[in-house]
Image: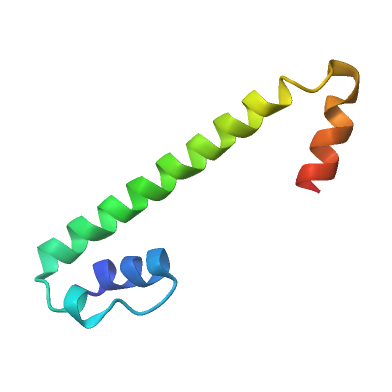
Amino acid sequence: MADADDRLRAALRADPPPAVQALDDSDRAALADLLDDARRRQAKSLQDSFEASLKHVPFPVRGIVKKVLLG
């Protein structure tokens, strides 16, 4: 299942270790799904944390702070 292998390589940013490659196709696909879901939840959590942190910055300078932090 090349699609699951490609998704795993993209999620891991490297070739999967031999133990993962030894899994059958459906298990590799499930692992790829879990990794994708974990990345999405992590990105959402980081975004929520960033927004909550900005609430502690005085309103008149929030735009400047966002520009400095985000580029």
